[in-house]
Every structure is written in C-alpha cells, then in structure tokens.
Image (cartoon, rainbow, N blue to C red; front, side, top):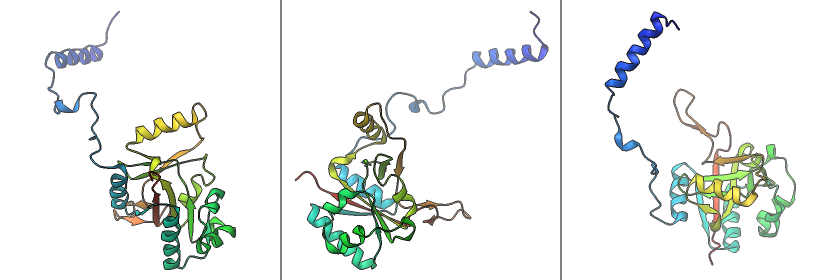
Length: 215
C-alpha cells in the first residue's frame, strides 16, 4: 500500500518523538493516591468552616428545642412573615408559634421571605448540601427562594463527594432519584465584569441548621 508523503512525514516525526521522549514535568502527579488530604478534624467542624468560607451561615443546635429557639430568633430578627415549606415532617418538629404559624399558612415560593428544606447529606470537605428529587422540596426551595434555610442532622455528614454518592447508591439501590444536586453556599457569579455578585441565580443567603443526633 502506497503511503502519501504527508503521512510518511507525520509518521517520521512520531518515531523521532518516541525515540526522544520528553520527561514528565510533574512526576509526583501520577499515581492512584487521592489529591485530597484525609480529614484532620470532626466533620461538623470541617463542614462549618468550609460552609462559612463560602458565605453560608452555620448554626449548631444541640436538639430540636434549640433548633426552634434559634430559628425563632432569626425569623423575629429578620421580621419574616411568609415561610415556604413543602415537607410536612417539619410541622411536627418546628412547633414554636412564630415558626409554625407561617409554615401552616401556605405561601407561593415566589412570594416567600425564606424557604425551609431538608437535605439528603452534607459534604464536609466542600461545605456542600446534597439534595434530590426524592425530597418534597426537591431543588426548588434552594433555587427560587430569596433565602434558603436547610435543616440537617449530624448523622447526615460525610467527608467527600464520593462518600455521598456511595451513600445515596446504598440508600436507593437501583432507583436513584431523577435529580441529585449540590448546593454550595448562596448563589454567586463573577461573570459580570469579573466582580463577585451574590444572589443572581438563586438565594442571596443560605443558612444551615445542624441538629446533633449523637446525644
């Protein structure tokens, strides 16, 4: 078979390159070891540090009573009157009248002051909230409300994203939710003249109330 001059020239260059290989510029970058360091502190602390670095507001609660107290104080401080919550389980937990009143009265998401949701998991290393379509709130409350309030428990913490995906696969087996998403702090973008702007494509504020389940 006749080989064209251009192809022969290309093959010649490849043979020459293979006979004089270029050293790998970063030899330590090759390998199977993870580029991320293992955790050095409690997952609650790691998550809180990473979440607040991303402009999130973290609140630790020892139990449901303290959850009600902390959330009540926030609502009074902000003078919120309209709370959106699609998950009925919170009605039996958030019993304080200041919280329960606005939740019991249905309100459109577009008209609310803040949305209250749960979540699937928390990723400590990145300070991310994992949510899915299996949650009654889905992704809606974390995207369209001006303020997102997420309530989670300490036993929902995992260290890395891969740990979270493995936990979801174990939980749902072959019936994974149609949507799995990670929310990492309030919405922000730097597309506008390379200046960081918060709240353009979603909530301007994100709160995470972490309730201790180890007690």
